[in-house]
Figure 1 (cartoon, helix red, strand yellow):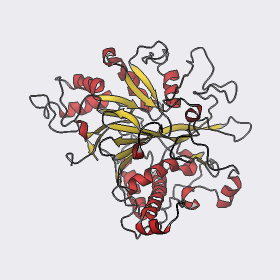
Figure 2 (cartoon, one colour):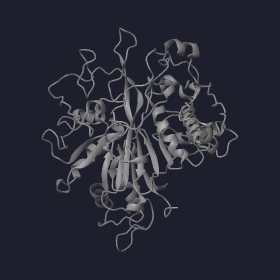
Figure 3 (cartoon, one colour):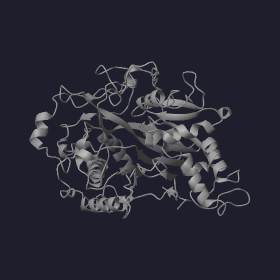
Figure 4 (cartoon, one colour):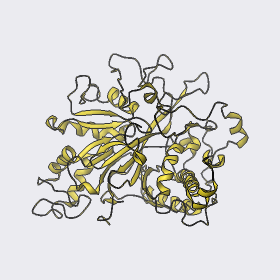
Length: 503
């Protein structure tokens, strides 16, 4: 299988805490690069060097031949120049990992980056850290700021061990052609495009990009002499692309007596093999659109559906932090099985739509106009939501449902659609016994099923550290049951951190 694979993925940190040694960290490479320098990209770095050491300790010396070549295990084919796991892990971090992509700046996704960076050698040049501008602003202002951690970046007189690469949300239309339009280099052999997603909500009063105080007297992002001014310069430096709809401050008034709520920004990275065009998606922490302030996941599914229909998108790595016993009010910006399958059902509907549009009969009959997904599928309703459809209609804003493109030369539009209504927080309720199976969709008797061949790998599982079976076992069984009832066709997996995943 490794000989036929396009990607190899190593999940160093599969959990979302509370243990600090296994939080989110993923290595991805194109198999065509054969472990050459700068051929691996790390997606998030809650666990990075520690996870590499742990894996090398597991396989050295049994799987290392006399020439230093790893003969089996997740690092099979990698030539290691040193004897110990620690020295070889430092070599991998310095030489093999070409860049680090950060989905969002929470500690369980960046702590390893801070602790590991001092071992970099300035003579090799700074290590790129790529993310949306708001994510890098948070890292710059609140971690590498000479207060929480030394400024190891190459900005503001820092040590120069890291360099910030600010990504254009939705892709930079000045790069690439055809299907690769908008993608930028992630490392040797891999391209990437980043879309913004929602990781819950917070009472944000200061936007780290613009410096705008949404309410005076903030205790979260106070204006202070230790706050480093952000200079978030996008690769595309036009005003329209920098302040794109998905990265502008999202402030939603609730109770006038309370601070406004804002979306916590996270990211979904499309990773594309430069040689074959095959892709995978790696999500940061994400919540379902049905409980979110904004319908941002739908933009990801709209971008993904044609790639699945063509067979070019092979796998999705996405979180599912809790099992279905969790109530919506206590998701805190995360997923559980009922919501993940509901999201994948939206994706499935869009794949069916693309296939119908591209079918020979449709091509002969249809005009240039492209039909849209029915509203019932594009606007999700939480399985546990108390909101009625009439309430959603009453609360739906009367403003247009699309916003301007980030750049006039952009050849595609990923519309931003606001949520129908704010979620019901209430007291959480007693709904643990109200898990509903997704309704079978219209494609239940179609062949192939819409997501057939797609592999969904579950990351960021919250451990409960109690006796009994691992929480992932129940999450996986619930996902499989919901997925079968929804006739999706995809397969669900929980990665083993001691193995390489071949895609």
